[in-house]
Image (tube, rainbow, N blue to C red; front, side):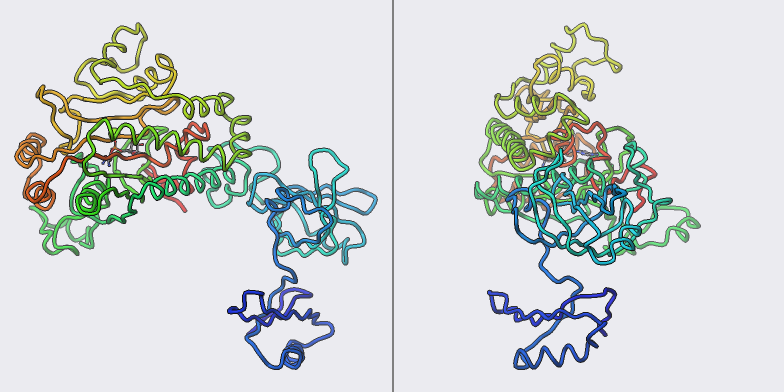
Length: 521
Ligand code: 4AD
Ligand code: MG
């Protein structure tokens, strides 16, 4: 049944196949028409050709971004969004700042007593209310905006109780907003974040698609631990409460998949399957790690982009990673200028300069061994002491990229003990063909390597890493049948959002962060 929550609306005849719209609008006011009589009338006007639909909106919606981009002075528009502020004057008019999420800027709406039911409607509006406005776009005489809308009609779609609405005009802390993840996208900061994230994803796909890479979807549920680090979230339908009563090993043959399964920590291994058949590929999807690290750069659920290229040696892998980072940073600078200026002004005053630096300059490349020497000679006092053979902490990575080189750095040839089993071993017997890309303010943003393509060497490495080659039989077969040198890397999306927005905490770089003890929403 069609309900009519609003005083007026339109009955439309829609012919979706007709690109001209093929629409016949009939303005319906229930004061005059019963809906059934309106339908009858419309049928008469249109010769009975349907289908018909009821909509409370008389005109097509115009987004604020379009109004500001194209100015549109003199045109009538229908704008819908959420009220950020209301300023009422005693002379029977009011200013509304309305945001519809299409851009950072609000549109100012001037509402005066000529608007039907002005006095009633304006009382219903407070911060957070949703409204639809039909009015004319005019050059603004006031300060702060080029254009504004002079309302002819105002509809309050949803009120918002001023006493309880959590987002008041005064700024809120990021910690507070994390607890309001359902409302924080309505703030400038998280609206900007969402737009930047969106543009990053679009640029990432553009980068690979224009280079002929194939987008491959790898599984989220898997039975192999790619990183071999035991940080896998288990997936099971076994009854945990019942299991508790039994002593002894769990019989996974009774579990859903017939063996122990978990959420993927990386799509790389499956990516290699497609790369060694189809050529250059990339995966881009959610990734899960059950590491209990409460840091500003770790999430339990994050998104990773993983290209995998046959016939690439490590140097080509580095070239691709460098042009990838530089080009997606440039892409976001081009697409989200206003949002990045906002982050520069509000959160990180060196942001735009540091992004420009990334786009314009080549990355420094050196080995892990050389980097350790620099750190040891630096005279800097680190919280965690560093020496050859130890994994770097973010403080060491940041020292190298922020203070020593003052630009992004690619470190290669890490000790084999601290890197994953699939990385190609160097002739020195001590290091592997690994590469990490380090950027200012974050540290590691990319981890990658040339892969071990030699069957026997890979088995040796698996044993060294206490992994059972039987569990990786299909991965080993890629080395038995037509093996090729190949390489790839993984870029963390949220760390990249951190990089381009200057936000210090990764929890503010994903819509719904998952961290130890936190999975609300
Ligand atoms: O260095 P990682 O662990 O490498 C891999 O997973 C490889 N299999 C990638 C490959 O070669 N295809 O992770 C890659 C990147 C890191 O550099 C970081 O940006 C991000 O993924 N990352 C995380 N981001 C947020 N939270 C976490 N817990 C992350 N762990 C890794
Ligand atoms: Mg890594």
